[in-house]
Every structure is written in structure tokens, then in C-alpha cells.
Image 1: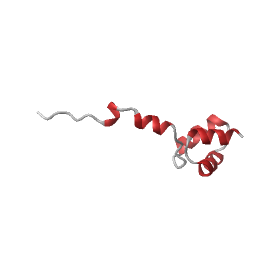
Image 2 (image 1 turned 180 degrees about the horizontal axis):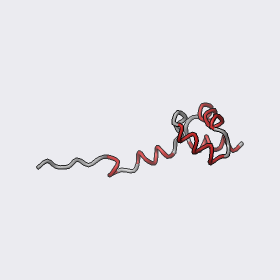
Image 3 (image 1 turned 60 degrees about the vertical axis):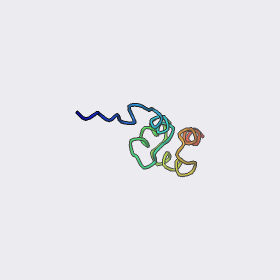
Image 4 (image 1 turned 90 degrees about the vertical axis):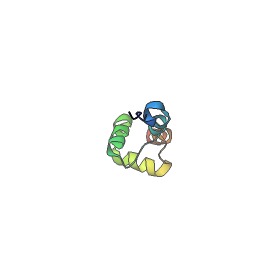
Length: 65
């Protein structure tokens, strides 16, 4: 019998935490989520990501202004 190989996502949550800390400007579902959360338009979210980078904290700060 062959041993089952464990996937890295089952053993580590590190990648998921890092992913939550970022906003993927090219992913429509992430842009829509952030737009709805902040009450701004999707284009405003994309502009914020381009201006300050993809750090969720920085994007949220930029949108709050």
C-alpha cells in the first residue's frame, strides 16, 4: 500500500494568513468584497491597490480617506 501524502494546506495555515493580508487587485471577487466593505466603487479599490500596493491595511486606510 502506498502512503497518503499530506497537503501543505492541511498542516499549515501560514499561507492562508498571508493571503488574507493582501488584496488581489486582479481578482474581481476580492475587489468586490473590499468595495462593498468600504462603501467605495470597484475602480476606487483598484486605484488604491495600484497606488499603495496590495497590503489590505494600506488599501483600507487609503479608501477610508
